[in-house]
Length: 193
Image 1: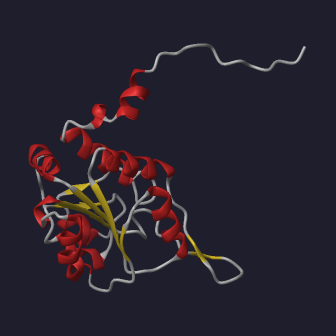
Image 2 (image 1 turned 90 degrees about the vertical axis):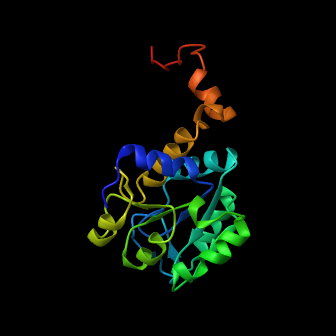
């Protein structure tokens, strides 16, 4: 699907909930098992800050994923994400529950996916987004494609796009503070005599 920048901008303005897949979106898709057969995941800190800023601006974030892991539970707790749908075989089938819990309609939801199981959900939300390294069928069906790959800042890219489209970016107190901070002193360098 080819959408113009202005069409994407209009869709971004409507979003009240960002729905995220995990493996291949919040992570690079790698699954690591340690010697105790426990699954671990690597999450991008930039994506995490983007999620926190989005929530600070009053938007909701929800996870929907086919897998379950303790690492994901810990990450959601750390970020303050309370809506988590894991172990989901049919992601589109839980959209009504997500909409009801968040108090939003599918026309107010953006979903970031990367692979074939994400396609049914992508077809029914307002803004379907694919990360740069998504399966080609997902790339073809997405309204928007990120520059970054999954697990490498793609979620942050989307969070900032939503905030900027809605005029919220520089109204978030921390962002305004960071952007307007003056340099107060030179960093000290420890030099040997």
